Image (cartoon, rainbow over all chains, first blue to last red; front, top):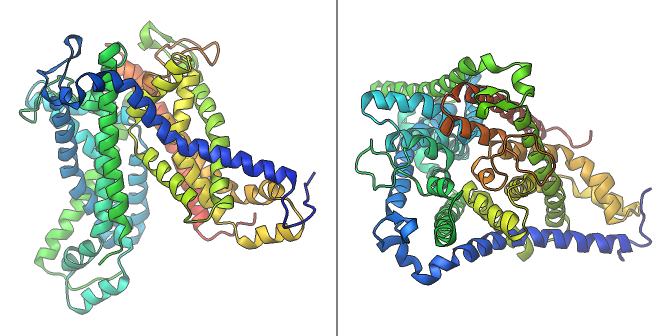
Length: 291
Length: 284
């Protein structure tokens, strides 16, 4: 049965109800973010109230049973793993994007892009598992114990590489063809056109992609949990086992109580703040068109 | 494609670019081959349908697959109405750049970027503790629904916006209520986009581990109800590889199943969305 309205300008009763229902649903979804923040804050309040954020940076170490909640070693580990991963993934990803756009024969473009898309869809736990069974023994043969910051960086790089490659490719595709024709007219070779014209023109989009990759690297849990060694220490060398902030939450949440649990929730809030900042920067930076 | 004059440094660049791509593709193929070689032995009926024994070292992943399916079903049951309703609200009832659209859009963008472990914390705090569901398939599914919403809403909303305005005006001229227009005209037209969004969200949900570890728990028995704890496939792989010595063989099998499932779903989703963007008309 198709409902019909008596008049176009005045809504029927069914329509009025529908509008109210949809508005309520949209409101609920809009409020979801607020709910997430509210619950995280509520659960972390006990430890934030007692000593405030100073606890997390000035205590003796991470010994939750004794009330010491120094996050710094894990924060450094997270940052080191992410920066190392980006240092590997951004050049490789950009080179892949440049390949797809400027160097690939036409029949190879779609398959390479498919491979990138498929890489992006593989779960982090499978990356971690492969890292654990293949990469960690390889590193251990070079320098024990194998499960280390280096393993974390390598696996994380593999995970964020598709993001950089796909967004880089989109950014390069948006470079006006007139720029490239101008480069050819000036007698630049392909290397010159890519390095001097295309990449600089696409730099905003590329930066946005790198920031999104950074956000993903910071938030990654399972892969780092499985390959990085999980020892709470500030990384001294590439081969030190370390524990990332995310892995810490995953490991200790199962048995944490009271202030310990509140401390874990607080580290979750910190992660969310960092990732939100990066995502916001990416949205702002990527929105601008090439200069 | 432009082919300007080649010179020596240019050749070096070409070699670098090809090497980089070969490295990336090689790593990907190495990973897939490793999974396939070690996991293919386990891909048989007994593995897929029997329960795990001896903490998963023996037996199969039958109960795990059932739990995963139930968690997915709960997540979809929660995400589809909420997501569809919000998408319809965004595309039909608000102005494009208006305050409501911007608020919801910003909220969804931030949600899309939140790490999955933080969603796990939120799900634990809201569903397990505050609402009292405990470690259950229900908690896990609802947490996953929160994570699926941004992707699903964006896909559905773009599908709805792509429907020509003429169709809505024609429906109004024929005297249809907005509800009928939605049900009879817009929904069928946006169905492919919705399906693609659904498949992408499902892909993301299946890959989730961190959010499920402390919302739906670790129990690997056959779940009796939605309030029972259940172990998802991704969590099973994690447990087998990290906590169970000698569990690697089963972990390879489970990982292969998961990867194949995800590859199929993601390939279907991208196929669908390419057909949409490839210039096909919306009329079926």
